[in-house]
Figure 1: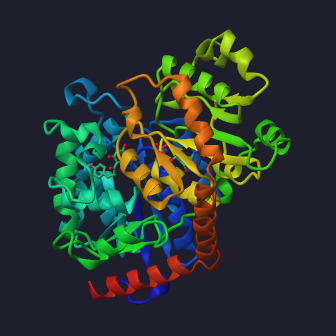
Figure 2 (figure 1 turned 135 degrees about the vertical axis):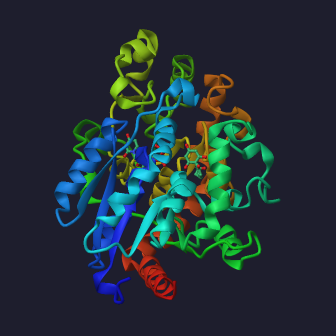
Length: 443
Ligand code: UDP
Ligand code: G50
């Protein structure tokens, strides 16, 4: 292994889904800053256009980064019994993990370590252990989720059982099996990198660091908040122009991330809720899980009557937006979010109170972080994504609560201030990377 900070060669192995890819690219950019050599392993075929575009703009902006293409063996979704295309891709990568061995061994100069996505852990550790290559995890969710994950299948007393993703309650699902195997493999990794920071998740990070939670848990490096890169910027002419004409903190921004589609019925109720709230809104509608499959226009999804009602109150789009830039606008005063972890950290950085409406996976646990921090609401009573219809009236009332809550605004402003200080000084991340480097030298 390389002996000085200056000549390390690190491979990054992200998993599928923009929420898993973006934090990798953001981390990669800060590692480049350290003069480390980087190899980005990209998995093919790529599920969404959002991911393909991100990868290609990123690689053209950073020509010093080597790309290694990892071609997976296709899986039959029916035989694998997986309907979600991103989850299917996780399973596909896992089952092709043995093919990583030649790809890793042929890296030149030899790799110093690899950073593996959380959803691939147990399948990749067996490969890297054979090659004696140190392996770190990038945990793309909250420290709260990491606590749950590290103890699984037992559940820490701080986490209610109802907050577990429904899929984890099915002990026969391949997701649960993988989750459990991944948890068991934690102790074989050299460390866990996470996009969080002390002021956002003090208790959970302290608990993880204390070593009392799980035996053999490797060191956790809270490197957050991760910031977006120049290459993520896209031109947003119409939404920005519209936002510029709105009063300060008056607009609700609504988005459920990159891979959550709502039923048409629920989309319409949400539309009525937004209208009933009497607030201005900027709403990103998504009706298909994978962006390539979006065919219907807004007229068809929302219906003519709702479209007419919306006209004077808000702006609705049905395409990829530059979320960071939207959250940066003064006019935005609230965020209805599914609570994907990247969105949570981005909202915290900008000091925007969140109405958390978790749909699946780790999102309920992430929404609890917001609620516990006092800077947003976690709508437990609205259930998980598909299992019941939340009516417009109820949604409208909650939006009013969100936008009128001064206490949450103040709490949010406080968190935003520390987040910005941290990223300005690069302090948290710099020190953590130094500690990581020290831990590597010892390994
Ligand atoms: N995002 C964006 N524009 C969109 C949708 C998503 O910029 O139209 C970004 C968002 O800012 C975040 C990431 O994509 O950084 C989504 O990750 P998150 O963890 O919030 O949710 P996921 O998409 O994984 O469910
Ligand atoms: C994404 C998702 C569902 C989900 C999680 C996601 C996590 C992260 C932890 O990030 O909880 C995790 C560990 C191992 C594993 C899968 C996920 O195999 O859509 O639960």
